[in-house]
Amino acid sequence: MEYPSKLIEDAVSEVAKLPGIGKKTALRLVLHLVKEKEDKTTALTEALNRLRSQIRFCKTCHTISDGEECVICSNPRRDHSIVCVVEESKDVMAIENTAQYTGVYHVLGGIISPIQGVGPGELTIESLLGRVSGGKDIKEIILALSPTMEGDTTAFYLHRRLKDFPVKITSIARGIPMGGDLEYADEITLGRSITARVLFS
Amino acid sequence: MEYPSKLIEDAVSEVAKLPGIGKKTALRLVLHLVKEKEDKTTALTEALNRLRSQIRFCKTCHTISDGEECVICSNPRRDHSIVCVVEESKDVMAIENTAQYTGVYHVLGGIISPIQGVGPGELTIESLLGRVSGGKDIKEIILALSPTMEGDTTAFYLHRRLKDFPVKITSIARGIPMGGDLEYADEITLGRSITARVLFS
Image (cartoon, rainbow over all chains, first blue to last red; front, side, top):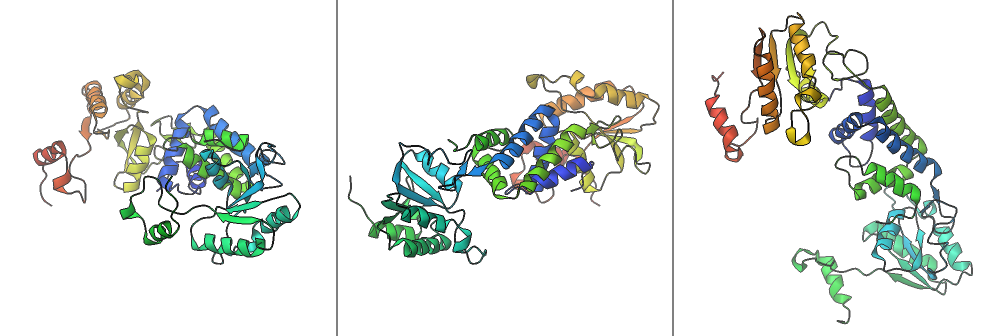
């Protein structure tokens, strides 16, 4: 596509670098901004610049945070003896949204993936071991990783590194999702949901 | 959804104001920017700010332009005796992409829509009449408006205002799109494509 304006072309090319946004969507967004008042664009770009320059990561759990320690780690009413290990900050948000968990988190910052060149050293695994061995009285580690090959690899690696500590290691339940139709569940999920069946309550 | 960070919340709220972007997509985009290097965010926000503060509209055809006159109007090799009337600058880009048109354009800046409170006065219709009556030797006006009620209303209005000038008024062809299946075409399009049939060539 050719653009009648270099300014449009530059803006489209930058917006189209965002994940899941193609050139056509980018053009639509950019033309929308041009039609709106200038302060709308300013509000957007200022929020993004402020975010990117001021964002920090919690010194304890490595989740996205406004301050040195995140609101979850600094909350004394959370159960600091249970640590839920997740890949990314967005998983923390997803679990927080369920309002079913009162423990704290540990964000790995990714997942072990030899294909993408991510080894255990790139993740915050040493920091997690430090938390467990640091006398902070951690009783349980919940592994909440993706149900993929990389997720399982990371879980096995973490299990091997953690098994000598006096800590219970659990994993989130796998099974048929709520509202899921048995007919459309894959065999592995369905198989696991039968072997890992629970008492009807 | 609750966010662990006010910075994230603000950024998501701004990004989610863009058309077709919901809170979930906005969060995905924002977290992507946080993961990337800071200069990626700076490049994006600078391109948008530059666009919004420097963009101009061609003094002749009102399309988006970097300078006072757009690259099409200022091109002496274009046929300035044919003017294609469209709603928005993006329609100019769409027609330019076909590489089938060598005339110039006139961007109305919208379409007559009483429901949305857009009357002829909000559009660049007087400017179009000025071009036609201004002795610039315009021979043909092509109406390339949306095939909707509002598009037809605008086309009829323009026809009424233009019919006393010595200028040919045409409209883009309506019919079955290339690759379109007759079975799935609506009756009006199919009906019009039969009554407006053309010689096989």
